[in-house]
Length: 194
Image 1 (cartoon, rainbow, N blue to C red):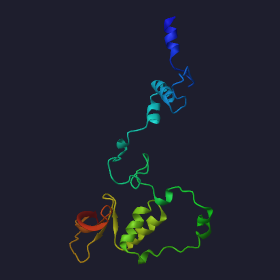
Image 2 (image 1 turned 30 degrees about the vertical axis):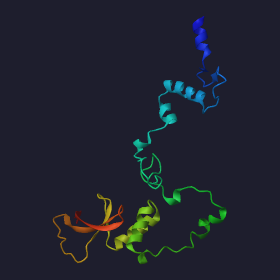
Image 3 (image 1 turned 90 degrees about the vertical axis):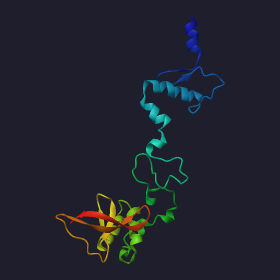
Image 4 (image 1 turned 45 degrees about the vertical axis):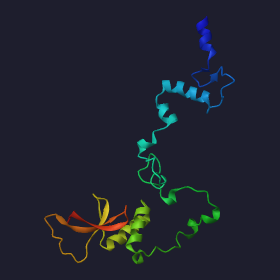
């Protein structure tokens, strides 16, 4: 019948993904028009394939694609909250550089007591989840800096000001805080737990 001829005259895709009756003018690989046609027909039966194959709108992931600055310092991927640490980026390096196993127990701990606060904050914010972050936090704590859990910033009393009066369980006052965005020590009124 004429209906059977119409159905059989176009590109045919079987349920197992096999494509037949491909015109010679079409690219016949998985990345060409036939591959796209196969995908569209498969997506009609399984809507989950649309997200996997066609991708996701990158602006929906919080990316500013109109930015003039590079994205890689602030975006490590769609499933990660913070950017990749430098030590987590995988590179192929010559075996001569892989000496950690040989010197691990021979290195002394860094002398954090002699470092300036600016460098301690750098170590804290760039070594997330690492032992170095804990060591930097410990040294900042010994210098009277305290991490404000709710504000997620480091604060310290302003030297020479005696305005800190305990009010029950709270201690209001003006404190220095370290702003990691501007990389400056600024002052602000806080009410902290006493």
